Image 1 (spheres, one colour):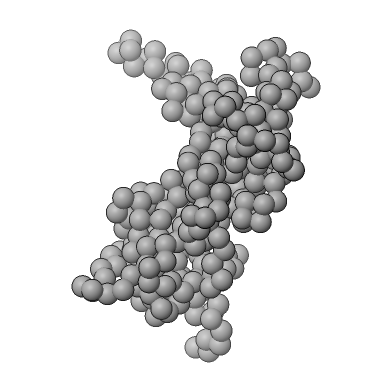
Image 2 (cartoon, rainbow over the protein chains, first blue to last red; image 1 turned 135 degrees about the horizontal axis):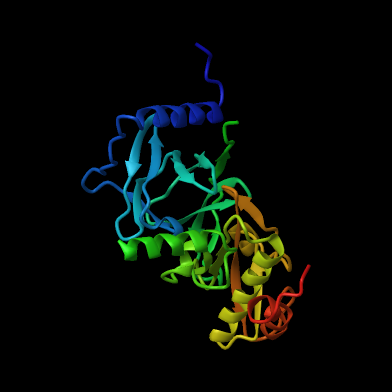
Length: 147
Length: 144
């Protein structure tokens, strides 16, 4: 078996594992009582959608409550979304993913978008002091899409 | 049976038409697509237009620009600026033109919009944009 030498390889493995496990269904993430959590607000586009989360090579389904998700804090997580949709005489799918380190008490904002045959998953920190309401989160790392 | 046949005929007729200028939530015409908008984050509004396989790029662009201008005027804001992404919005790097692309064989696009009371660099005039694209929405289309 090939050695896993980088974070991106580990993350790719997580995504692949999650995709394979999707056949039988991943467990839904259930935080422990009194566990510190961070909140992720979902953009209106995906406010009722489930996202995938991989935490230390274990993957879960995150189900939103009132357009928000709760995630564990203080270590790197992988967040991804699986999209399978039909278009004009075509079927298309994508699994955009990113990793970040959430911190307790911080609120994040996630947006998903499709444009010109590409899909994007972006995560930001909420920043109520600015007109755009968000700011870059310095811990976010993109995960290249599989080709 | 007649009702079902009528509905089928309507769907076939709509299916052969390019998407018009209407809301995607429009009960019948919305089946072919249309414009939409969503609030947030912050003061941004995400504005989009979903076209079908028959609409052309120029008309999709016109409808999307026109709807942004309409939203500005509905809010009594004379100016607006468009961002191609949230990253561009955070960096305050507005765009003046769109890059309409295909998704699943259909033409559509979206952008994030901020509305302004006073004109600042990167703003578009809602009145000027509406005038520019008026003929696509209400007039005879003389565009090639």
